[in-house]
Length: 207
Image 1 (tube, rainbow, N blue to C red):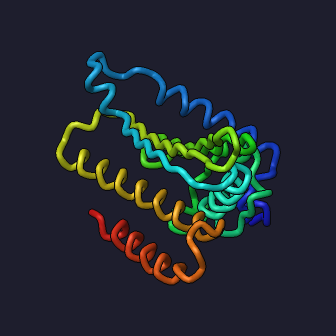
Image 2 (image 1 turned 120 degrees about the horizontal axis):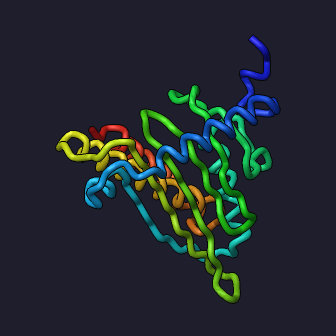
């Protein structure tokens, strides 16, 4: 097997063209209206929006989030490996998934998209600074869209579990960012790390 297949960052031009075509085709499928009922159509999508505020300049906050975004895609990735339009193989249990960085605007937005289990997943984080650039407002947006309406109890329950896990994931990311930027002092890092472990354990045990 070619060494290229083991790399997280996909650099083969032919593969990039194939993934671009595949993602464009899938995006059109998920954007296409399926149901006549507005209620059923809305039930296909699950949105999660969280707002957070950190008392640090936007450049520092964005830089730290970019580091975390790279690591979350693949543990071998660095912030400088990410670029808008880039395709990446994920690590961990989902190492067969392909993720695309759909938007990367310095100090403004990081967005990624991927497809799995007949669903489209879009995750976006936007950054806004105040006039003095002493506070950064963060808007976390997560959208999961399926090809069918979510009507049954089990489907609704699974969607709720997914939303809770995404919320925990973002809260953990915020805590790690606060420690990295010195918002949480070093003497409180041990307690914060224990809190993170509890949060992750809680998310893992959700079912």
